[in-house]
Image (cartoon, rainbow, N blue to C red; front, side):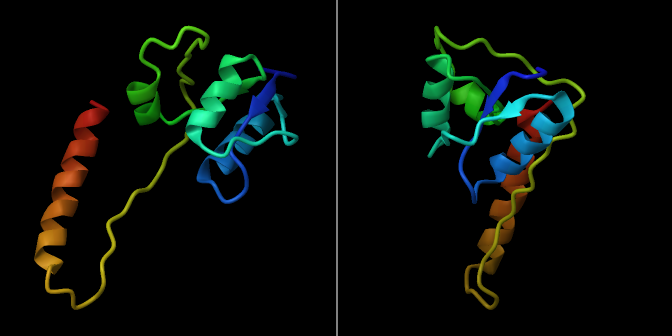
Length: 114
């Protein structure tokens, strides 16, 4: 990936930090002139050959079906990860419901990556 243009989302998006790390590790050139405003915008930028990008696996699974102009590669050995949490107001009358929802969400997420 050395010297390849690497596209990302703008400031405030978690993906920016991950792509910046990947650019540093691979020698790619982080394109800062153009920023995607969403993953869909970023996917379209890649499809018109503006550069390469990094996409979350769940997004790829749902949005890249039948994409003709994009070639997907898995980045093996990359330590990228994301933490997702459930948060609710302390003392909520629905606290038990939210706890069960968190357990179900965790089980569903674990099942996606097996």
